[in-house]
Image (cartoon, rainbow, N blue to C red; front, side):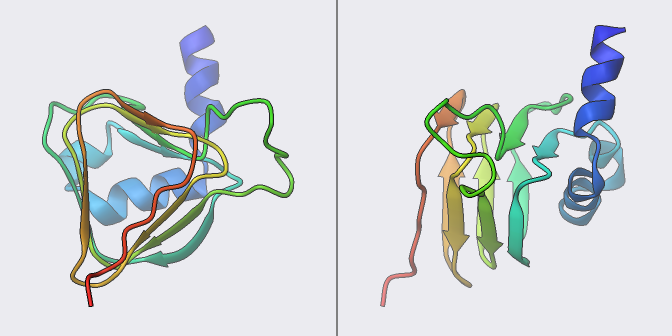
Length: 124
């Protein structure tokens, strides 16, 4: 019952949207990307690739934060127009910001965990 309650807790509209927008159907139904309800989506463009076998919750964005963040005022922000590559499990904590400009890209290695800010700007 614990596993079922975890699944129901994280299956919100943003999680459903992200998985079916960025992944092929066969991968999306496994829900490898979990997005927090508190995440703000500014741009959901670009592409996301997962270069590993997919399983439920292997990529988490805006979850698993540390105690110093204010859950109401410190939101995670997703602004992607470029390319994100995940080479395995990745936990990007509450209050993190991801910004990838058109033509830019970020690759996250295996077992990536971040509880701060991530930014990538296109070289000009």
